[in-house]
Amino acid sequence: MNNGAVNYDSSSGIISADSIQTGPMGFDTDAGIVSWIDMPSSTTTANIVNSYSAMLDSTAILTIYGTTTTSGNITYGHVGIGTTSPTIARLSVQGNIAAFGCIRSATSTYSIGPASCVDIAETYPISEDASAGDIMMVGPDGKLKKATDRAGLIGVVSSEPAILLEGPVAFFGSQINNQTLEHKTGSMAPIALAGRVPVKVSAEGGPIKPGDRITISSAPGVGMKATTSGQTVGIALEPYDSGEIGKIIVFINLGYSKLDSGLSQALDGNGGLIVDQASGKMKSSYTLDMDNNDIINARKILSASGLWSIDENGKLIVQEIETKKLTVTGQQGITIYDRVTGQPVCVYSENGVLKSEDGECWAAETGGKTSDVSAEGGSASGGEELVSDTDPPTISILGNNPSAINVGGTYSDMGVTVTDNIDQNLGYTASLDGGLELLQGDGLQIDTSKAGEHIIIYTAADSAGNTASSTRTVEVVEIYGNQ
Image 1 (cartoon, helix red, strand yellow):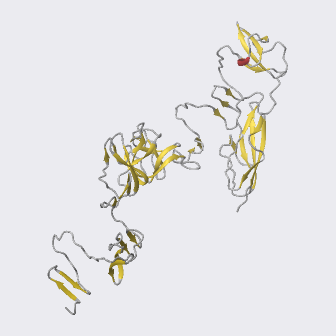
Image 2 (cartoon, rainbow, N blue to C red):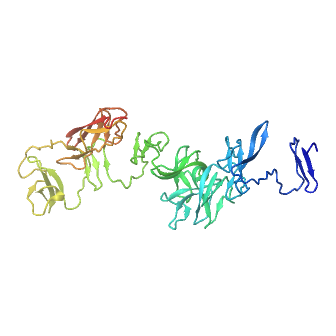
Image 3 (tube, rainbow, N blue to C red):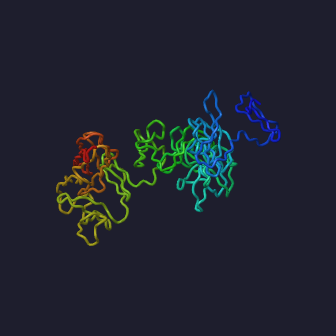
């Protein structure tokens, strides 16, 4: 027809036309596999572009693209969306991609699921039953099990991973690869590596607030608020305060947690008791009432002034004792100091008679020089005046003095050692630029944001009230210069 512009081949049932303009098109019911458009190629010239596009208002939306080879075939067919030259990859998209569902990218198949997946997970073998939200740890056999302590924490069983890594294959979307919320012993469970996941928690560590770190509780696989430094699995995004085990959304952030570079929120919620996560020390801005409970496993206790202390060996150092009863057990006696020489003398009872030996009681040797002492406390030599301890402690600064640090650096004070002719284990305070006196220099920080000179004054006092001080100069300078 029309000089060949339209041709119908009755033997093949094919209609040929130079150009066709149609309305809606359709196919027979149950037509099966249908070829949409075919562009035959038989040329032996390579790199001739063959493509066709579906267009809207003269704009190409979808393009099928290929180039010829010398054997009369085409190279791998490419698909372009928003581009007519999809030469980079099998699928090239010009513009943004929004996937409302989940796509499985494995071999040549795909599947579609819901769009609630928000984490990245990887499958691991498990040695016991587990379910979504369980916190997991590495067992002795290398397989995962519900966590029972902080050692070996590895992650949380995912509910609906957005991306699931399984060996050499990556799946995209939730409820993929026949994933379920329950996982049996010996199977592979998806462990969240990043993103947000529901996590089983309890209020064992106190009420959970958004921003709190989550670690393992005493219940296997169940998390709680972390109150001390250690391994944590992530950061709470929701509050929780219930007597039952529940689930909250947690941002996965596995690692050793110091909570913060400064001080964490007070355990009572009002800033009264705080934990320095850098040092692990607890501080209180109020009086600490133990409510008739014990303090156990203490190594030593130091006063803020350094004038009294109790050490790990049971030695008590104080300025003054006022008591109704004092009992000295064992065979050591009481150490006093000679009024004239100021040297230690051990006073003890032997067959009801008070005697003395030169030296401290715990260092006195049998057969040392002894003398009788009257019950009233007089000495054999008479009533000389008491010579008090007038020697102050000696402070030795550790590290360089003066000390230099580059602008922008971090200063860490090395502190001092304190020795005394009488007392042992004396503490000290440190004051920066005339500020507060900090016990043992705890919390001392120097502003290194700009160059300048800073003065640290260390102070120590012995049981007789003698004090000593020593000064360190710290220079914040441009050591290396700024480029």
